[in-house]
Length: 616
Ligand code: ADP
Ligand code: MG
Image 1 (tube, rainbow, N blue to C red):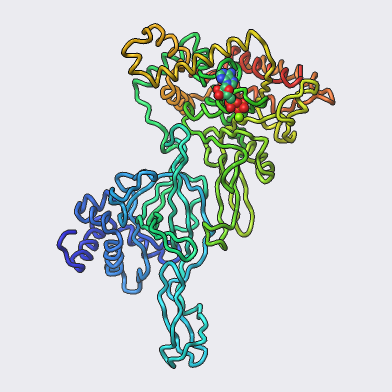
Image 2: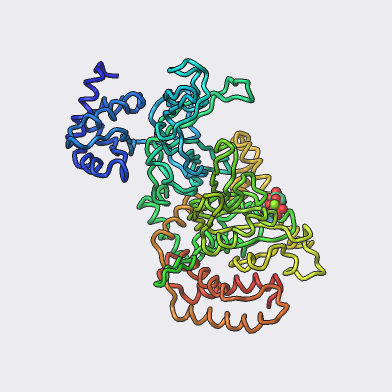
């Protein structure tokens, strides 16, 4: 640190406030302490004023914070105003550190850092004692003991009568502060290829408590600390990382959306005008999996999704498409699902069995995170996938709590939790791509397929599309599948043995043939940009032809589906599904209008799904 005395540093901050934050401090003084208790300062402002001071703030935040707050108390204000316990909160650091990248040798510990991510868990806000007043029950003397984090300190003996109590805490004379613990997890879009997201815990106090809900995307600034771990009474040589929160900014949900360069946009527009764009799209989904053209097309439409409508009466119709693959084991469902992570701008892949207590939706739990006593609200997969795709394998195995919360999550796209003083609404504006096995593990060919789907009707009706996959022997299909899988495995072999290829044990032609077979037609990175661009800029509306096509199909379907023992009742939800699929189809072409061809594509998919289940 610069060779400045404490006094000089405090004066420096006063000077800084005079130049940059005169108005803000005036407002703070008016609203302190009830409405406002913090002065927020922008790192850039401090840096502009004095680069050394700003850098010192980052490297020795605890000391500098004290001077900054002392300066606030000494700042000249009208005589009757005192900013006794006001905080200084620094925000907008120039860069943030990767949560998974926090390492000892990077010298982050004890420093002020910013992390970006999604709030995974948050405890309820509870008062924490910071200065406790112990009243001696024998002589009435008040003994004051400041409390740090960790073990609660009690007086050894009374300062008045020197006896060992008993003492009682006097609440009026003690000081309390609101406290909350939150867990920030890496955002889904930052992860590649099924990495487990890492997280960091953060303690926040006073006016920044209760400001975030699990599922919020945030940038959090705080001081990184380490804490010794222990098992029972044994201290461990390992330490845990945590942060003391200084400021939390809730970001727009799309803040991490990729930057798409003009050159990319031009490539995307060219692609969107090609005649075989739908085939190219299908060829870009899980190329290692043979067949399933319809399912793959549906996955593409799901990626692009329909247009969300906000109606004048305040209600909302989702644009997101939910689809389910249900079928015999070993038919490539899991493989298809996990491929979504490569091509979706934002996605979460998980299993219905779930590994976290929050499961697929959300949960309020009393666990170690909040001292075992405090309640914690935790976001599940559908919340973490907000504005993206939640790929949920083994959906039929989901917990019963999830089943009921799922109805609201899928249709209203929010999850309400009301339990033990926690009342919260979490957003789940995602598309669900589910996979499940039939009731008996595999389809029984003597029973109608519709009756072998082991999910309740209310849940089933929320899926826009349900694909059934049966694994029946078929020599021609099996032969082609075998060729494909053998080639794919061979391609893996080729990849791991590039060196040998170079020495030409394989001809270049062989290499090209195989690589072509398993490479996606549109590069995955480009496809992610394509999808993001379309969803950002394209909001197609229906032409009359498209409307007529969908209307006709729906009316016809209703008249057939009215049959009492129809396996899946056809409701108005199907109509919305048809519209969404047609809109998604238009988005693939970046078209502003939904044409008859889009409506036809939508009708074809829906008809084929219904036929599989036995509606025809
Ligand atoms: P499921 O989840 O349906 O039980 P998996 O996705 O785990 O099945 O697939 C099992 C294996 O079979 C995987 O290695 C997968 O690659 C392979 N497989 C199944 N169907 C196909 C297919 N149509 N094309 C290529 N590989 C397939
Ligand atoms: Mg599976």
